[in-house]
Image 1 (cartoon, rainbow, N blue to C red):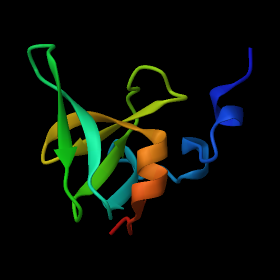
Image 2 (image 1 turned 45 degrees about the vertical axis):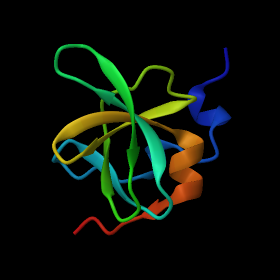
Image 3 (image 1 turned 60 degrees about the vertical axis):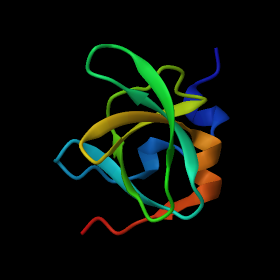
Image 4 (image 1 turned 30 degrees about the vertical axis):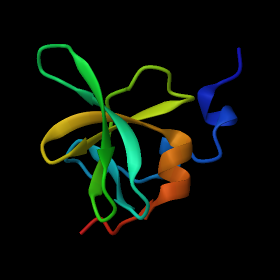
Length: 94
């Protein structure tokens, strides 16, 4: 079995941890689709708008080769790696 980090063009391993539970921040440049994980266990597809700052979560989001868990506005979402890489850019950790 090939490791997920070998399958991805970008891996979490290369992003420094900050001690607050997050490993990276991204500013959305083009709106992206995201799966909102509701507290009741339900899921709904939403659009995260341009300008939103997403915090990459250390918690998984299902298949690590396809989706990444992020936090935005105190809620947990799953986004596709491709969308994050192509429609967002790394933000400062400050």
